[in-house]
Each structure stands twice: as structure tokens, then as C-alpha cells.
Amino acid sequence: MNCPDCGEPAEATDRYCENCGGSLQLRRTPSGGPIGRVGGAGCVGCGGAVSSDGYCETCGRAQPTGRDRMEFDLELVAGVSDRGRSRARNEDSMAFGVVGPVDAPQAVVTVVCDGVGSTERADSASQAAVDAAIEAIVDALLSGSSPRSATDDGAAAAYESVGELARPNSPDTAPSCTLVSAVVTQSEITVGWIGDSRAYWVSSSPDVPSRRLTTDDTLVAQLVAAGMDEAEASASLNAHALARWVGADAEQAPPHVVVIQPEAPGRLLLCSDGLWNYLPDAESLAARVSDAEPLKVAAELTSIANELGGHDNITVVVIPWEGRVP
Image 1 (tube, helix red, strand yellow):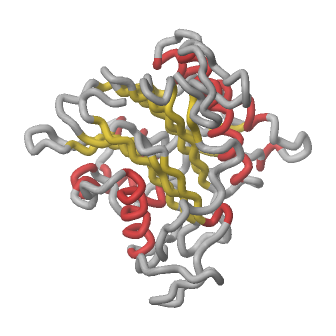
Image 2 (cartoon, helix red, strand yellow):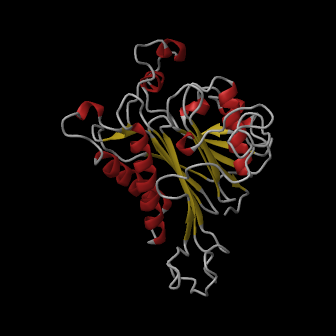
């Protein structure tokens, strides 16, 4: 094999290139976030061409910059994180990577975190969580751990990293976030979560239904699970308050984990509530997922959430699965 960065020969078991130091076993989003957009992308509103001064030549819309709009594409996985139309800043974060040599990938790893808006530095919390979690998951996989064990390691690393952001004199506003992760191999998909960021399986076969893979850690979800009617539960005080989260003031416990072996090709989709608040059930979401490449699907769903109101930050990561991915 050859280093994907400098082209120098390397052994298949090497983790880093001896010539340039680049990773031979992982291609991923930059640590600290994939700030900005993928080159050549059109207007976030109408898709038109964007001029050098940052405005759309068709609709005149100013294009978002920095964390307001983050995009990244690794072909086997791609994602978009957008500030939305109402929030002052984007407090969502995403990290993903392809594990294994470029010509023989072994797994796709993805983490999405949503900063809890009622806490301080929620954007720092979500970024710290995704960076810590993906590093821990990848290290565990490369050390031979199972995807389920690696998922636990990722959540533990996120707890530790976000916990270090807390100020001793303000424990009630400790930076916090939700977390949902996925490890996709040739044979199965392992999803872990804490909070209310979600994962969906969007089937490409009419014979296999699409479905939501996660259950929310919220009061309303707990009341429904206990037998209360959903409408009555939703009307309860603080119905959508989080029951679990990642932060210094959180009760630390392993993430929920589900493992699936899809019966047909489809797409795994991880997202924050900025999307699922508008498209909550799997059927309504699947109806809006096109056959386009992952980055375009993520951008299309982000645009739909903005068109429906965009009241919260929106993050969407898409991973195609053909029954033998990666």
C-alpha cells in the first residue's frame, strides 16, 4: 500500500506513514470540527452559484461561515451541521471517519452531539465530546475490541472530556451535550446513544421498513414507556427535558446500545433534534431521503429542516450500506 497523503510505500499493518507521519488507518473529519463548507458547494438556500464575496448570485443570500455551516465528505460517509434560522450559534458537532487502509476500509465510525442550550459553552461540550468519542472508538477498534465495547469506550471518553470543561464554582451550568454514535462494518451496525439525538435506518427496499433505532432519554419517553398515552405525556411539565446527558453533572453510565444486521441495502442516518423535530417518524423521514450521494442527502435534509422553520441547530450524517459496506 501507499500513503494517501504523500504516496510513499508503507506496510499494510503500519498505523502512520514513516515519511510524512500521516495516518494510514484512518481518514476522518479534522479534530476541532470540519469548519466551513465543501469546496464548490452552491447556495445553502437555492443551490445557486456563490460569488467571491460570499453572497448567492441568484437569491442574494449571505452564505454561512465557520461553525455556522460545517460540511465534510469521505464518500463512504458525509455530513452537514447547520446553525439553523433562529439560534445565535451552532452548538451541534459531528465527527466521522473511515477506519482501515484506503483500498480496504474496515469500518465507518460516526459521532453526533447536540450541545444542551441551557448550559454554558454548549458548543465546546459537543465538540469535545465528538473528538474524544471518535478517537476512543477508533483506538479500541484498531486494538481489536468489538464495536460494542468500542462504543462504550467512546461514551466514557466523552464523559471525561466534557467533564473537564466544568467550572468548580458553577456546577449547575456545567457544559453538557447529547451523544449518538455508530460503528458500521461489513456485517452489522452498532449504535450507541445518551440523550435525544437519534439514529434511523432508511431502507432502500420496499419489503423492509425503515425504522428509528434509538429511544429518547426524555421525560416524555419515560412516561410513554411506563404506559401513559403519548399525547398526555407530551403535555406534562418539562415533558421534553433530558433524563440523561453527557456532562460533569450527569450520572455516568454506559450508553444504550443496539446492534442491527440490515436485511436489505439502505442508509444509516444520525441527526440532532433540529431535523427530527420536523420529521420525527422513520416513514416521514424516509420519504424525504433521495438516492443522491451522502453529502447531497445530508444537505437536502438540512434544507428541508430550515424550510420548515429551522428553529434549532441541524446536524445530519449519512452512511450508505449496501450489505457489504464499507
